[in-house]
Image (tube, rainbow, N blue to C red):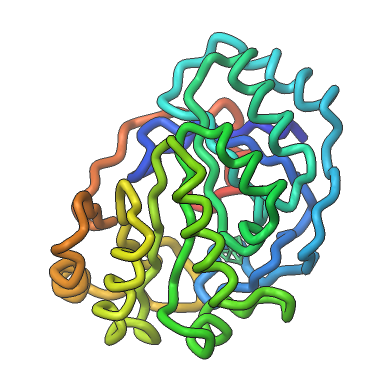
Length: 254
Ligand code: SF4
């Protein structure tokens, strides 16, 4: 299976060519979010390791050299910062594909200095925060014990000071955190993101999405933040994936 999939139509990144540095059979993640569209985490992990060799990364990138996309996006079947060769892979993508690079992360490994350093190589980092406190964090994201909410918030703040690229916060709103929008907006204000992305799970999963009216009310709580986008307002480009089967394994209902 190639590590490259898509391109997929992303409401946040336009035509997004997916790079899956994990490429494991089931989901490999430090979280087991209740709304995850990939199902339950079958490979729970909080330590970094190499899943795919750099020679495979190079070979798979060479096969799509010249492809047109707005971003090459590190995502896939789990948390991309778990791959210990993420930094080298970002450099390879930039040199072979000449595309801007985005990384979608659940933020859990950002307390690590090596992870923050590697993320600074990306043009866009989209960091997840779905809760305003430890209790809801454990309820919604179901992290493995080592991760704590406070540490993650401190790490994103540190990263903001170190990073010149575009930092976006992605916030998934569901019934469990709907009434905490104001607290989450105050947290976002402290982190000075370039953008806040307000989401609700529109693809099939175990949790119902909030309505457009709910999301508009949540968006109003973020009025002090510069740029705030919501999943209901965004447009998606038309794209045709290179291999639909491989794409659907990483992104159901692409
Ligand atoms: S962090 Fe992402 S991949 Fe991991 S469980 Fe949550 S939604 Fe799924």
